[in-house]
Image (cartoon, rainbow, N blue to C red):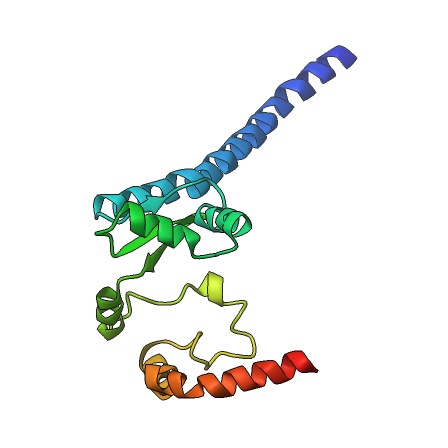
Length: 180
């Protein structure tokens, strides 16, 4: 009687083990899709559009930028390499996790991009959501008409002539700070 009870328990627990194994297989397949297949497909899509793209599982282009910073002391060193290897390219990009980032470095394309007024270009809520706490209405986090208004207000401070006039003040202030 005890042996039959053991066999019955074993046969009824096997389907439960199978369900657990199916669940684990599903989770692994989902993670592989989200972290490898999906970003690779996005990178491939942009490569077909003529954009030089970098792909690496995980941190991707961020890892590459950090490597370049550690080797050369410059976060933009990768941009310099890409612009030399692809002189006609106006942008480059890569994956960060399961997302793609596109970096535009052509001034005309940046101007064209900033003129577009549609909702297709929104700041990623996962990336900027945590950072928005306490600064939701600033230039970095605002979007649409509010962003445009903020940009117009602040753009004068970065005009070449204004910056040129400020150089003596910047030098004087810097010297005062380092003397103290």
